[in-house]
Image (cartoon, rainbow, N blue to C red; front, side):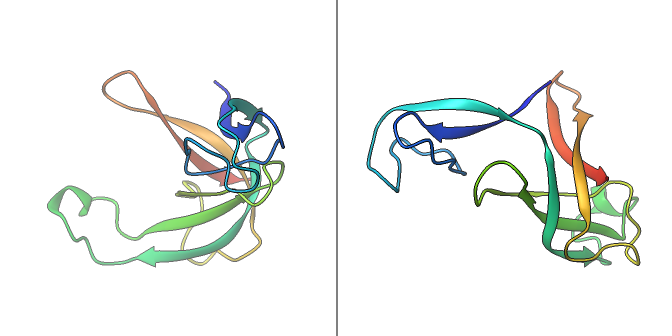
Length: 113
């Protein structure tokens, strides 16, 4: 599995979320470029209260904004799956892991690097 981020086919600027045109140059050309999946926690929050019964088993959990190392200014909203609330910090190095879903797909999450 590769983590791929949309990139302008003309000026090569990465963009997320995906869009039909490039915000930098206006081009309609685009491609899905593989990236390393490595990055750092840009910011995060720790959830202590389950807002839905399905989440009762997993609190506390984190929601992290991960700045990817090799995708310009692209940040992904995800989780750091192996970090306790005490271990979470801005600047924490992370790498992508793939969480399998019941429908056969995968969700990108992160672990401490």
